[in-house]
Image (tube, rainbow, N blue to C red; front, side, top):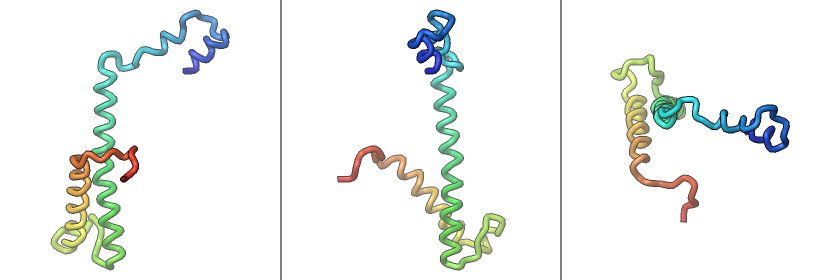
Length: 103
């Protein structure tokens, strides 16, 4: 974008320079690398959000909490964690468009 702006205002010393910056850095694999990054981010986000929801609910309900506590000693926290993770994965199959208003 910067090279295109410089070329538009004729401040770029090399003619055609914007086209050198327009090729993807990953080459043919740029789409694959981008997809891998987006999927990896989603895989990281789901357990973090589920863990924070389970921790918040357990704090509000005054349950024994923490992921360092064994599941036998805090079954409600791990149940909430499992339910929230399953609900998060199920939302993927609902086909909701977040950019459209609810009617």
